Structure formats: structure tokens, C-alpha cells
Length: 113
Figure (cartoon, rainbow, N blue to C red):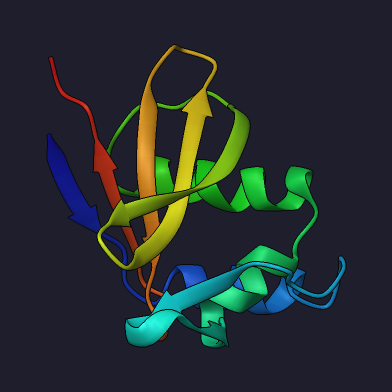
């Protein structure tokens, strides 16, 4: 698997799209089973409509240097224990895990064959 990080390129796009959509309903779980609301860029991405979110993920995947003609779907998933992110499916049958850090950086982990 290959992991690539995107810098500040995500922040303007997320900030532009963040005003749209419904409030985030996803929550992170911390030690002691206390649920805390997401914050920062991850919360903004969670508030986007599926179409907007897929567009953000498509750009993040392409910016990481991986081919992704279009993201056809995305779903919440646990990237690693205690860290929530997204699984994005591209129309070229590739799948990618995306973690949005509080500063807006997208960490894209892609399968390599």
C-alpha cells in the first residue's frame, strides 16, 4: 500500500464547499467510550453532500499521484484503531482510504499491485 499526503491544497476546496450540506452526524469515539463531535476540516468534509464529498476525494486522490477518473462512492470507515476516515471507490476499480487531519491535510492510502 502507498500513503501520500496532500498539503494545504485541500483547505481552500473544503472551506469553499463546507457551507453546503447538513451538519455532521458522525462522531469519533475516544477512550472510555465517550463520543466527541468531529471538528476542523474532517467535520467540514462530513457535512458535504455525497457528490461534493466525492469531488473533494477525487481531487485528493489525483493530487496524490494516483489515477482516479471519478469517485463513484465513499463511506465512513475506521482507518486504523480509533481513527475515522473515508473509503473512496473510483470508477477504475481502485479503492483508497482517506484521512482528513485537523489542518486539512488529506492522507491518501491506495492499494498498489
